[in-house]
Amino acid sequence: MEKNFILGEKDEPPSQSTPVKQFIGKPENLTVAGLELYSNLPLFYHQLHINRDVTSDPIPNPRLEHPRKDKKNGTVVSERMTAFRHKFYPLVSEADWNDWRWQVRNRIKSLAELEKIVSLSDDERSAIMAHEGPLPIAITPYYAGLLDPKNPKQPLRRTVIMTKNESIVSPGEEIDPLGEDQDSPVPGLVHRYPDRVLFLVTGFCSVYCRYCTRSRMVGNYGGEYRFNMNQWENALNYIRNHPEVRDVLLSGGDPLTLADEKLEWLISRLAVIPHVEFIRIGSKVPVVLPQRITPRLVNMLKKYHPLWMSIHFTHPDEVTPEVAQACNRLADAGIPLGSQTVLLKGINDKVETLKSLYHKLLKVRVKPYYLYQCDPVYGTSHFRTSVSKGLEMIEGLRGHTSGYAVPSYVIDAPGGGGKIPLLPEYVIGHENGEIILRNYAGKLFRYTDPDFVRKIEPEPVGVY
Image: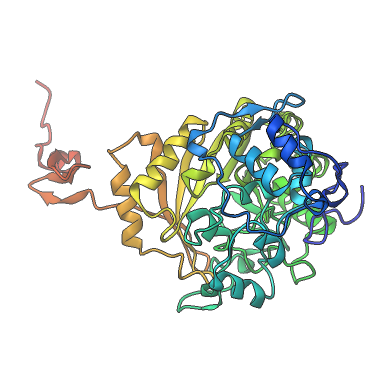
């Protein structure tokens, strides 16, 4: 195995896929009329993109899709993505589109590339032009197909395209708000809780979220954070030497951007440590790069049970036919799935939005696990809601939908305090040995406190 094999922004996963600019051929699956129209187009269109505003062309509504499957590998292909590929990537075969390595290699990472897909606002354009440092723009072609090309306020678009608000540092914001670096005994490993560790295995993501807690390190090729073989070995040795560690969470960056062989190399070494009881993977890949969840990957993962996965969902529009297939493949492999959602202002801070998301997740066997208050990392104040808004979300869910659809609302306390759960006030008070409770509908009920009853009962004085 090569010495340094962790992905950086200048490294791409290996693939046999044909690069876009070298592909010559007609888009498949077009109608006869469509093929005739395509044949009459000028040559420069066939080379990649035509020089016109194509963002106004209609894209099918994802809620009205009738997905089909790729005949070769059984991968679900939605009508929306088929239309998007034909419009913006007419020379790309369906096989390449469904190859996760092609998706990563052809991520949209520059202003020029992005402007071919969406009509940028002045705010977005100036922010991209002025950006320096970590957390660059990177969007998979698949996820770009979910963006509204005309509306800069669309929820999904706001999560992946920067604005000038990112340059504003508000009071209380920090570069490392959770204090992870201070709880790192060896590089890339965070040991905050007694029996579990966070293992950061890469700084690479297929898509960079603009509210990322680890914006200090992700996408920062050549920065101070190094992810390489030596870092992995040092972290593994630390875990081996600390028998109190029973739970290892792999994160980053995104662990699922590693090739199967590299990911298995790491998981297999964790799995043989006697005191490691189970392994978790934190990932957004099933959401932004569902093509990565291949039968080969899930067959590898299921060899290392118990293995759990936390998937980062943001909005109900992310639960597409492709994502549903990815989640079902993981669940069919026996991997328990939970969701982690960051509460974001103007994106998912309405009860009906979260309810829709959580209902969709349960249908694809993902349990809503955490709803996070947005961490106070540099340049994220425009995403952060009030805490009272978060409590309002939980109150609007609890009792109004299935308990399985209600996550825990938590604040990851700044400075290393860890996750602290928050709940609305359902205990109104105490009176005459009774607890006064408020239910989801606002009605009051009394419950006799057993401790109070025991205190007033007379002690037995003998046997009758």
